[in-house]
Length: 197
Image (tube, rainbow, N blue to C red; front, side, top):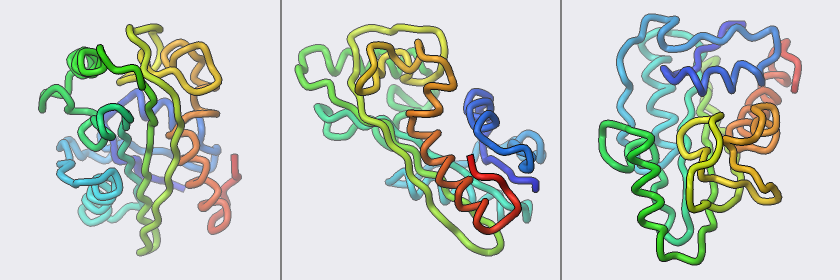
């Protein structure tokens, strides 16, 4: 089965590929010749994931899923949330985003945070949403070289390492995207000849 993951992000692609069973051939936006950056103008993670999946499904007539992920920080009222990728501006610079986050949390004692991923799947003229989340806290400095985005400052509950210090297998097991992906794969396994993970 061929399935499009509506992303240009190679880090996301690697994470997801490790989760998928062998019967699924994962295609990126680059693989199908979609070089455009699909707009994410929704007010929620759900709206953004749906918009990307609908864009690909409509123009390329292929089964597709898209995700949107946000970091929700308690002391910042849920920010950066839907604006996580462009928190410090539309240029989407990870270092700038991290700096802004740490500056805004400098005098905050509550550093509780949650990563949330929403996946929208469009297949067989049906749209289905899957959600995964993980709680943790924002530490005061970057640690670790693995992962991407806010991973170097996010320490999941029950661990003394950040997502950027943990092996990818562990991050996939406990993380937001891994949970949402397992829900997606379970759904596919009930409707198609796909092994559940």
